[in-house]
Figure 1 (cartoon, rainbow, N blue to C red):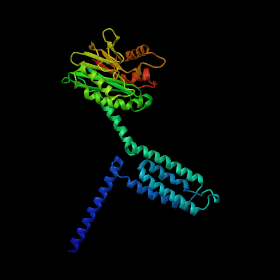
Figure 2 (cartoon, one colour):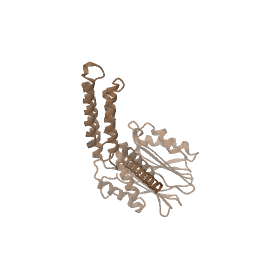
Figure 3 (cartoon, rainbow, N blue to C red):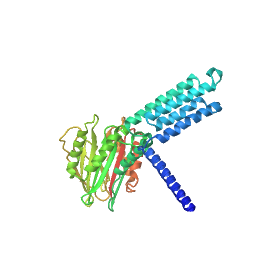
Length: 379
């Protein structure tokens, strides 16, 4: 009987410890996801303050009174404003105790001076501002970086070009302004009509870098949903209507929509105020501009977009790009396009494999604007 009781007690203890470990682990996961309470961080920091105070009293040369800013800085990043006030009250009490034990500040350099109090108070003030801003946004700092990373990956996945049948080569390069991770240029693409047609939309949102990134993210999701759900001639009118409904102060965009028959090589190119495409004719070795008619997206309702037609024969190349690649303050668009085609001629022999990234490096490496280049080659 006693052995059975001991086994039962051990089993209950194991179950209890398992529940405790599971609860702590779940609380930690929820906390770092931004879904849980901040009591773990608050308790840890509240314990750190008296530990620092004891260290200051015992060894003031190694643990200065200003060391209290460390939990305050951590609290500004980890805690909610209400919890942060409790931490500040504890830090203030610690300063009072240190001042009483160490004596008046004129008695030595390790005392609590008015400057120490001002430093701790200033750090606490800025920490509270950060916590209040984070609370208004509704995103804890521990999730902010993860969310930005997730958004960047979603943009990258949405811009990925679908695989093409044998005899076709495609590649795309995107370079945001200022070396940032987010761009106002984006691409959405899909194979429609049972996979026989490739539809690609290259869009340049007004603004650049982070200023245009949020609008580009919203539009890329909307355009990705529209692509393939409407007949080709209905895509840009629908995109224009969507942009108008957003009622943004700076809400216009340029866009080019390519509809390519992968069997015949015939294509239609629709444009909304975008730069012309460039096609390399393999027979003549010359580049030809392909410019369709259409106004900017988001300017006025009822806009019409008339396509230009063409055909990609074996050896031909089609380039779609944004203005950041060919236009700068000291160079107009025609000069930029001449330079782009001149550099592109270097890659004819290699079939343009790996050319998109190198072309941006060659013609617009140091340009402070978003740059995007799409290449389609028929072998």
